[in-house]
Length: 226
Ligand SMILES: C[S@@+](CC[C@H](N)C(=O)[O-])C[C@H]1O[C@@H](n2cnc3c(N)ncnc32)[C@H](O)[C@@H]1O
Image: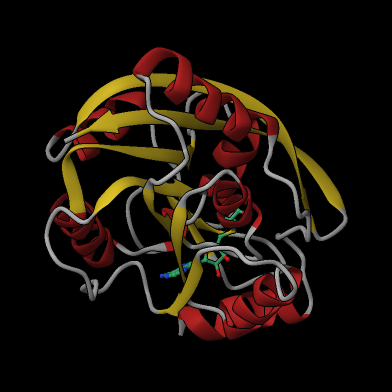
């Protein structure tokens, strides 16, 4: 079901962009790891959840990391693979849902990133995702999440009222069949701190284009440890 929705989205994009460079906040996060945590990208074992067309996967691999991109859309994986066809980068793409059991052993990854990918999981899948990320992340590993913020986001408020989904704090994105989950600060902290130590939580703003309309949206950027 979700797979079909995302396939449709990549075939005729309304939400996703085809950018091939990481966004500024992501580059800033990588700098923060290097400067504040003394963690360099080179040699890191990274899992990119919902890797899309690979902008973050490729960036990390270009900086010397070994990266697995986990993605539900075949079209996205093909687009991502095309981008690095001629480069020798250590990237593997895995077609699989981030909301079902991961085919990895315990404590395998130094860094796991979820850049606006888990928003469309349902509550059951979200539990599996949290369990699995916790299991495959090394003891001193880092989990980076960008999630949709409910606090002060007028667009989210409007959609929760006018286009509600079936579960708590969800709505259906207009023009798509995609259900999205937004988090208040309290909710984000409660959800993630059951599994992780929240080292840093920041609220940011940026513009997203949905079906030709531009929306100002708020996001959570979280850096977490195990
Ligand atoms: C908003 S895009 C972000 C893509 C990428 N993280 C980036 O920052 O460019 C969300 C991505 O998550 C993928 N996705 C959504 N649900 C998924 C799931 N259950 N399992 C794996 N990938 C999923 C979508 O196909 C899409 O590529």
